[in-house]
Image 1: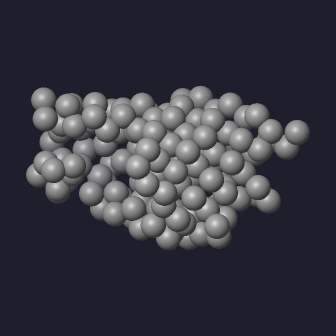
Image 2: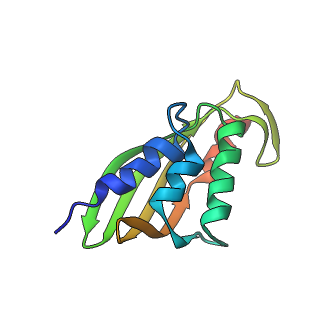
Image 3: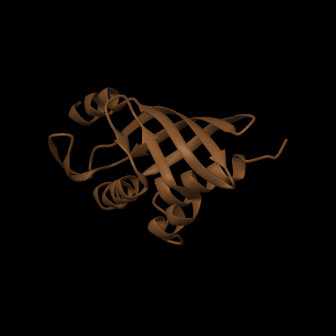
Length: 136
């Protein structure tokens, strides 16, 4: 079985985490399939929508870090448990923040990889905890 975890690891290191050595849009253009879907509880984002959201988050949370804690592969799927953290500066989830408060939340993602690219991600993030931490 081919180890595809490195493909997924690049998404966390060079796109979800702010990385001044990487161009998130360029890396996502390479890593994500053209028919990519990011599937959450409420909406489905295509490649362009997710790329735009990541670029927006890089501006809003300049120290954003998405640290993969555990990666499990089963066939062409990689499950990632990670910790997302950062200190937002600006309007973040209805709060006007100055970067002095931070959040640290758990996330779970299931990535499907086909042909060396990520085709689909099911994801859930604990944003309710982030809001609680930033308000507190």
